[in-house]
Image (cartoon, rainbow, N blue to C red; front, top):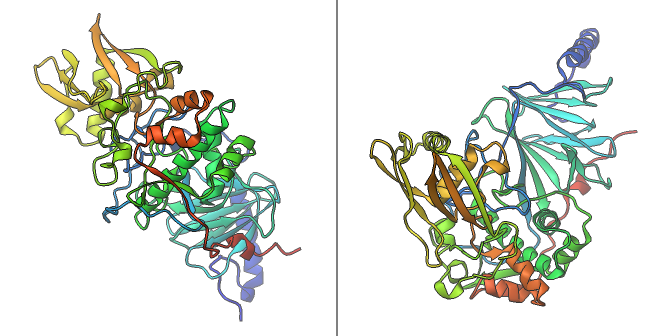
Length: 501
């Protein structure tokens, strides 16, 4: 007896009407399916990914060579379940990390594979089905619309009444990776409906074995010409950070990290030998403090003015540990002085600065930060132990005073930026006013907590090992190598049926 798989199809009792319905369905599909050369409408958008609540200041981890401004148009998840109080123990088996690659708002998820086939299954279904690739997946009010052979003359539509997520995998023993938006990604896919955002919204999440995920992080985070020891130190830091994010979001959200600077940059599949070698040579290695994994934050360039994770990431038991705290003794005045972003300057019209700040305060419900009527004075408030600006004291033209956290100010300015040239590289700023403009003399690139990537490269070029680099940037942390004693994680791709000939 056949099991109802949930895929909508004509019944055998009404062949004539089924055939007629199929013709109408395909014709409708040709009228409604975007062709390969269609220009997306202005209403479609791919929202910049939100920051991780592991980070109080949502500017996130800075990526070498990139500083994408963050928007506030997306809804940042606020789970009702509280986060765990304790950091995770170092794992002894292979883990799968959930990486959100795209937040699609008003446009379909379009995937393909070199074999010409992909396998889909609804969350509550017993059976899945193979589809001809490329496919386009649209959320609907009561389920999903799947278009196979999307953009070709053989395109056809399928309806699936399924309120849960869709699982997408390559076929059994298929070589190559699933492709999205011109890039190849390792792992399997979850397409998650985002009705909390919009009825036409969905998230594209890749489920990836951790050790397969990490090379794509290194290939995106570091320059190809950098030293092998820098890559190894980055691999250990990225692995430790990822495991902590997985613990933080376990059972609280449908993804652990985003594939961008709000978490860790991720290029997806990579053949970069240096990245692959660094991950393989450090397999199972974690930074540990008091027996638990350290959330090993890092940024592009601290500018010689590092910050503690309590100051720039978030307060709490996860960050109030020795490896993530900065003291005067740990000052890094010559850490990355030759980096291109060690020192920089940017200026804005005072009116534009106030406009960006007011918009961010409004969007985030921060009545204590606005609205302000222009800006009369703008000075540094608090500094940390090494001189990094932590807050700004601002007075508007009405004489009203505001205290802005430096990290919030950076996020507010970058949320209103049109490009990286129109943004702030870090919150280590010294402001001054001149002729109707605010001029900021800045240091570094990123939040400044944990490892400085340019500083790590400087140490590598001077013969320092990966362990020495980690000891400098995460003092009191211990480097441990965990045995992989579990063999329970078998690739689910082996269970996917092959297409019938």
